[in-house]
Amino acid sequence: MEMTLEEFDSSACFVAPFQDNTNTQCPDTKKQQRGKRYLEQTSETAIGEDMKKQCCSSQCLEKFTFSFVANARRSFWEMVTMKQNEKIDEHRDQVSEEKCVIDGHLVCTQSWRIIHGVSRSRYIERKSSLTNSKDGRSGNTYGHKRTSDAQNFIRSLATKQGERQPDRDKVMLPTCLTQRNAYEEYQSTHEEPFCFRHFQRVWKENFPNLKTSERNSFTECKECAMLRQLKLNRLTKEQLLLVEKQKKAHLLVARISREKYYKHCKKAQENNKNYLSIIIDNMDQSKTSLPRFHTYHKGDANLTRIHHHVTGVLNHGQKKSFAFTWTDKFHPDTNITINCLLHVLEDASENKALPPVLYLQADNSAKDNKNFILLGFLANLVQRKIFRKIKLSFLMVGHTHEDVDQMFSRISVHLTGKAIPTLPVLQGLMRDAYHPTPMVQHLDGLWNYRELGMASAATLQGHSGPHVFRFKEEEGAVQMGYKQWPYKSAPYKVLDVTPLAAAFNRDPDQVLILNDKGNRSLDSMETDLRKWREGGKLSEPDVEWWKAHINGERDMAAPSAPLASSFHHFADPGTQDEMGYPELDVLRAHINTLSNESNVRVAKRRK
Image (cartoon, rainbow, N blue to C red):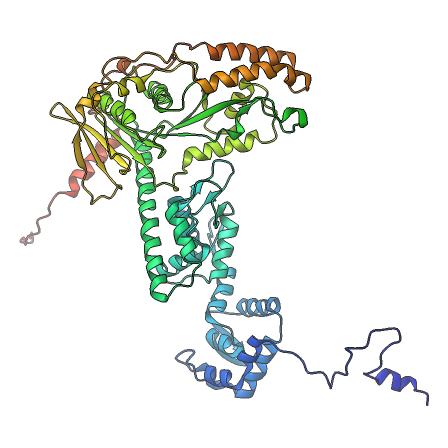
């Protein structure tokens, strides 16, 4: 029997030839699949409970029947999420004074939300995304206050807990601190917090360089690693609470240490006549082994490269940066730290006089900084009255990356992909990599302060634990105060270190012995120069420079750093001369009036 045209058009079950019809069904026989959220929101139980809620004092929900609410809710939840959000935004555009019209009734916006089954957090999130504060005078728009609060929280978290990476432009949070942990703290400290998803969006859009990671590419804090590993185990609720409590205590100590460092920086920036704040650290040498090229062929793999170490220093009060290069001809010890420090002190001084207070931040390395030689040298600076007080601080191990590492990061990024055949090229690139422009200098000679310390009859023991040291002179004796962490409530334990400070009273000799490691690398480099040239990596002028450089490194030149004895007593700012501004007199008179007392009395009216 043939099918007519009308029957063909009205057929709903016709399947064209050569098509896969294994899953084809008529619409009236196919059961439409619904999601879990749809079933929950459109169930009679959920609608009945929602209609019992009190939206406002006017009881707007009583104006609508159950069937009307059910149809409106099914229509809303049949949409995809993007269409639902568009529906909410369209509704918000029609809102006036938190009132809207539904089916001819003027009702509150809460009733619209309840009728459509929209959660309160989602409704507020969509409302906040459309709400901006507008300055009528200039036409500028500003984000919602809650967005600003979230940004301030994340910014504070990055400042107090984040660590700048020396090899890339990233700020890493401790490995035991996740984005969810940060949100929980934000949620507990704010009255109207965003949902987690919106919090993540604010984080991603405004702080793309702030990262959380399960593993740190550099030295990881032992406690952070243990806390992270514990949370992977199946712990009881009580054990999880204990781990969380220990994590908060651990991060609190790291944050307090970092905040104290920032306080010292700020004091030096606001009053550089009284305070001098310095941080010193060493850069990873993998990027500064010379010669260095972007690509190598097989014949270059085993050729010698000379390690050119970089020691970075920042002077916060005067906003100056320094980068000192040196090779393995010197032993990597405290002499490097002291000689670099003397260079910076000379630059910061005025006629060899320095501010009375020095804040020194150093890396937690016993070989370079945290040893009795550096402690004795700083005590001697106080004994010579070059400073009235010196405070030496160390951050928690595994949480030591700071602003000097940001300078190293910029240098490392700038060196990537560059051909660096000689040291002058490296120094030029380092100057271009960071602002303020670093003062780059190569150390050809060192004063041997380590020899003075080793010859001393006095030494220190047990100084590896404390993270704060303070040096002051009291009644002719140099007192070293120390404590584990920079708590305000923790008192200093005091120790007389005058005998150790006296060991540095005489001027040191210069370092004259060439380090064996450096001597071997210089010999190997001298042998491989011909291969570098034949491989096309070094030009003839580069080879000549290297020959002169190798000879210069073998000669132990006179140190360019000043001796500690060359500095004068610290400069006492005292009472500075006030400039003759008339506004100062007016302000001074105004301040005096604030302390005046008024006397009110009853008097006879004049006739």
